[in-house]
Length: 116
Image (cartoon, rainbow, N blue to C red; front, side):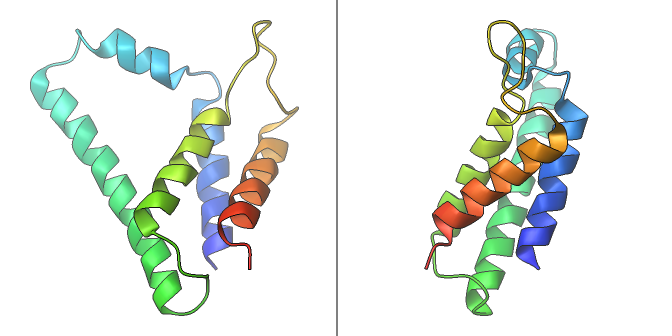
């Protein structure tokens, strides 16, 4: 099911980026990467959004989730992933574990976007 797949993506992303400030990383590498490398990163991001949009569209067409703009759903999901590793000023996370963060993100996303 889509929810299970999104759960796996969320947990894998959070585990892979737990020690990385993705926004800071992007700013720091701006002048270090070649134009070709930036283009490859942009292409990868575009493919990720396209895959998410297709997953949402496929589920809508199959009648498994309510109709929603798939582009909006994909961008909301990615935005929540970015919030997942947020740290307060004292560097403490919002939630105590990756697993708890994953559950909170999935509950918020699923209940908010796919509420009947």
